[in-house]
Image (tube, rainbow, N blue to C red):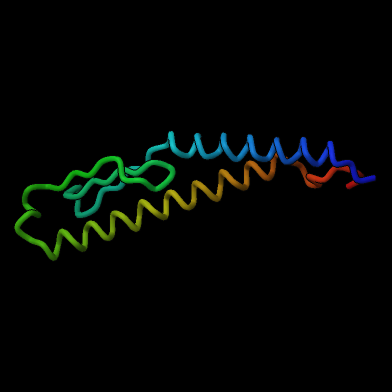
Length: 104
């Protein structure tokens, strides 16, 4: 039988798990180097840039700098997305095969 109290508890638990997941993601750092280390980019688990280092030699080569920055940003974003997907799957996996209770 459907029980609103159980549904409310389940939704509260899901919200708590989502908030914990968001905090866990924000605390992670992903670093990428491109151009043999000429560009180093660090992002947190939310995809926010937290550090960027550019070798002085690139400052006079705008085209190369742009290419290396684009590569570093794309690589970092892929790492963040993969981590978010793995974390979300882990969270859903912890709910069991039937999150609504009852017989499986």
